[in-house]
Image (cartoon, rainbow over all chains, first blue to last red; front, top):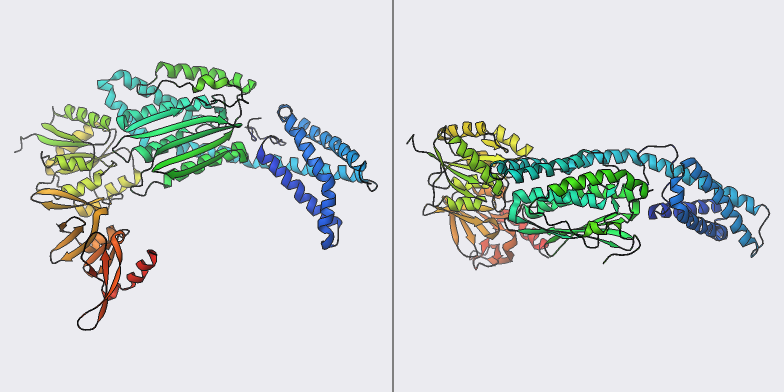
Length: 383
Length: 255
């Protein structure tokens, strides 16, 4: 599954076993539980560490082996219903337990009932973890709904809305064609802003949205706003949280371009590297006024939160100022459009793509090669 | 005089917004004789322009680079014949509230032609927006102090000020290059620029950035006091007994 959270809250929900956050949580939980079990078994504190080590000899191989199998079957497992998945995990736990015990007992003599105790302990831990992940998913789904609301509210500054309407009004008499284009761009932009933004979307969609947004800003800021796109190694089919880039561009324009009367450059660099999608946004840093931060921080926190909800530890957002350039760096795991998802979104993407091609705004750079690479092989780094 | 067309200056950093206002003003000419005397992309540009053309009304955006509309309104007051200023703004809830409270005129963008016409008709009866009113508005912090010299408004960037010294009726502004005479209250200036300026004496504010150090001096009578040493200017300034604590405070910061 693309996300550890699905739209409907089902009682039982399995995590994505390829997610780094999930794996870390499992490793940590198993080791802590082992340490506690060792404490229960060994009344003498001095001998506790030795007991723990002893138990680890059986626990760690089991843990590593089972995680490897889960990693391998994760895509298949995600397609099963959660109860089936839970049964598969239980069966797997027993199977791996027997295999590990067989392996160990050929090396070291084992006390009686070692296998039974091992299996019971392992099943118990697996049960606790499955319950934990189900609860966690449940706890996070209202947060997703909440963040959607936040996204809606924090997204477009009223300032932008009214200034854009004003810019369109100024075009109606002198350049009605351009006014039309601008209004259609605005319609597209607001359509995205107002839809349900919980599901991941293809990166190309987000880029299209950014282009429409920047075309509108270009309309009112004219020569002051210059945009550089570096999308040659962008995996267009990567799935990303909707509105992950547009708010950052809005910040770049608001804080980096508007406060200065001199022309400035906003650059967008998106590329694939080592199984991850990186997006680096840069804009001139305007220190004047000292009011740089409140709004900007809110947008960054909002995006950071959504990255965490969708990708857990595998997504991150960092920002810094270097040589009078403000830079935001987003890192996301590469997840391509799956066949099912592709069928579902194809219609929508098609329609949107056609609409925007008809109205490609003047001043917008020609569509870059990025989307053309959309179906590049996931494992091959581009460029 | 009643028949002379109303002279309007348009100030906005966005070209489409200026074009839109011009179109609307054109629409108003039938109902009211008026002429657009110029366009400027910032408060600073507008002020320069106002030295060569006179205007009865300045229609200005609030948020602009270099100098915003609120600061422009303060500086035009120094002109021999200050124009009326009406603000145009797209959205800023907090500012608008303050505008209402202080009865400062503004137009919401996008501007409605009827609303613009109503505002224009009022202009001959309006007085320039008073500085005390502008003080009440948020975001009106100045980036420049303005002084009048031979009926021109000269702008002194706040970051160039080394110190301000009150002398009789005037305040002397000292920059690295020269001195200017300003007619304002030192106490108000102290409040407005508390971040940047520090009081060292009853009659003197010094920019923290320009303090090089302090020196102990013994006078003829044997009583000792501190003197502020400054960057870029040779003279030193006495620290009064009451303000002595700043010597330690700033000395510590600079270490």
